[in-house]
Image 1: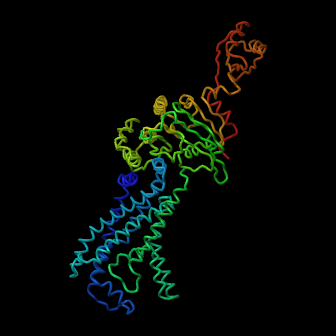
Image 2: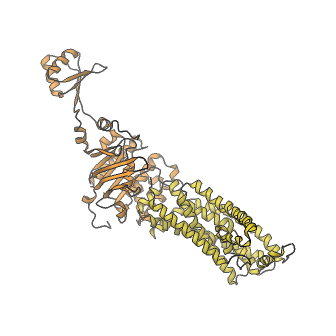
Image 3: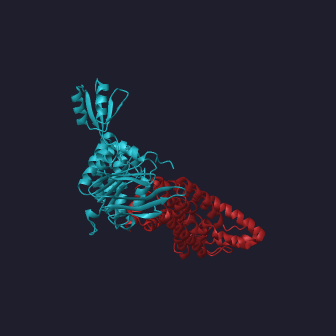
Length: 274
Length: 310
């Protein structure tokens, strides 16, 4: 507990967290705009021009709960990236500023230090989730009102999506800590994180859809194994026909976070600090 | 102190058979020495001798290939609340550049379970209170060293370990550090300081541990280590009658050399003997000085040919 308090104090006494929050604001506004347009289109209920094999999926997205869930979890694409990078910085800044020596002198039990870092990063992820959820609820309700849909805040499915979104923020912060241990260089880890998150996602979709054309539709289900796609699946609000179930997305992400955290702890325990 | 078994007499550092092998090098090679409480011990060696690696193994930052290093009978990793027993200053630049000095110390206090006001007290101890709320990137090198010492003093430790603390300090800062460390040793604490500033070490240290190429070269009180050198004393003599005096001294079985300024360098006899010999020979003397070997000369002779490039 002492160590967690120390880690949180480390975060609070530097500028990184609010600079990241400031970077996040315009990105949040951008995705809100895009989601507004999408909500507007979907709420009109127009299925013209939609290929027949996708009609079920589109209808599912037109569900009022799905519309609301999408708006209340707005900003996830960049939000997860930002909290992952914060997780990275929690570790790499110690190597960058050589404070890791002091940290391990103060607490020679490195497993406890890493556990404290994982908890602190997860807490920071939840703070970001809370911040953007508090922004999303009034903004989302206003957009729903503009297309004559109620705020849907009485719906269990919507709240489930919001909660699962919080879980996603928490897990991505942990993934970041693991990545930070594996790649100690601040710049190296940040760049790798961004490339894996954005490039890896697009790359995986492309490769999987090519493979799906060759070997059949079932391969598309492997999308679930791509961490960022797994997390967007978690917050869809409703089951979308043809997609894997939402709990599977959560399970995959928890698996990745556990592996990243475990690798991080085991690596740092054995490493010489010089 | 939270730990009742701890007493000043156990503030002894014992390094025993310590070895660290990297891929192709033995950075530290079967090194053994002890450091006593109540004294300042200088840890000396050429660059690359393995000083920093040894200190880091002592502090559980680097895992030894074999051997042990204990402080007060226990490994660093086994100390409960290590900061209350051992303070260490390893790198001058080890604080987040965007964090203020006081916050740097508060972060450490939080992790060590020390009260927050210890941060203010430690800053005052090293005279940094006016810079408490300045960010670390605005600190001079000397201020960074002082902040490092403040961090090491947070838990009021019995043992203090410093790696090259005089680096980047101005003469005033070095004098301050000397007084500070001597004062702490006087209180019965164990002070281990690595350095390559030999003239400073001669002023500061009571004992020295000299290593080269990862191995122990000499250990003991400074005077004893200097006195152990075979060379012993040398006498400088200036005289207008150099030839006469040289002949007279050689009769006393002294060896005499003349340097480029015409000054005689006399080995084998002491200054009173030289004076008496001169008087008996009726030779006029302008200077008669005993040259004691200093730590620097001893160090260079002991470590000659064992430089760090391996």
